[in-house]
Amino acid sequence: MKFGRLSPELLKESIFQLPPWEERSFLSFHPKTEKLAQIFFGAPVFARKDWVGKVYPKGSSPQDYLKIYAQKWNALEFNATFYHIPRSSLIQKWCSQVPGTFQFCLKVFQGITHQRNSSHFSQLDQCIEAWLQFQEYFGCAFFQLPPEFDFSYFYQLKNWISRIPEKLPIAVEFRHLSWWDQGKLKKEVFQEFIKRKVCTVITDTPGKRNFVHGALTSDFLMIRFLGGNLDSTDFLRIRQWIQHLLPIMHGGLKKLYFFIHQPNEGLVPELTDFFIEEVQKQWKVELKGEL
Image (cartoon, rainbow, N blue to C red; front, side, top):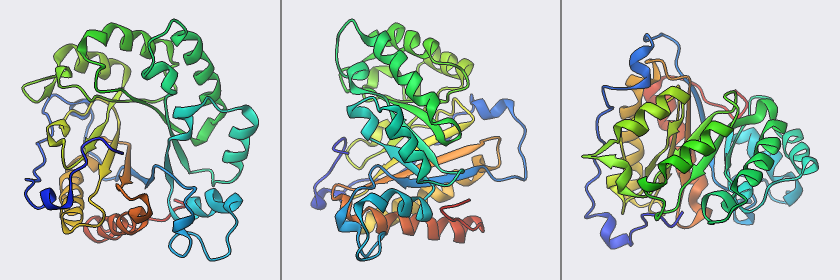
């Protein structure tokens, strides 16, 4: 993820504070529970040869990477679906390599989100057909909107959302500040998302802290966390998130997806393992890839 990267010397100067959860929230309509929300964690990639010795045993075949990944972590922010709409045979292959509780969070095809053409709806229909084939392995469809996709495109976004079957969870990441009003998601966007249970993705990057928010518009939450290549601030920020999330984990939230990014993706395993260790320590739960 390039969005919000900072050079190492600027990381130390950044102020890392998390905004409070908004009182107007999807969770405000649901009672608190003793049951902790399901916790899903992982990375945006799995086909990394430099993870051999960290995630994959020495001598592992690249053909087995996904299977081994899924034994260690239980979700994947899947970038492959951003570049092409997968064939049925490929979907079947992916799903056959992971346990039944594993979740793919599929990035929406770039032809829909990043290109201005007249074939959006036909491409979206092809995506939906593919998403449905993931069945129980489908976590959500994740719209990563480009920086130029501002509030003037709200009607277009609503049309996309309305076309997707309600049984398929949706998450949206905004990268333009026009979607916000004094740090809070615009009222009409909030209401539309609450109605459809669309997750407003929280993307925490060192150079774009003004995009971190407290809008909970669904019964699941996706957080995309960009570190600083194992800078000391990475570990501070992870601890802050784990403390910040605990109140809503018993507040009606059903699923939490937490995906770790690094400028150098070879360093993702170390910080993901640190996240798991800290969750287990602070929340007193045991996390395994096969939950």
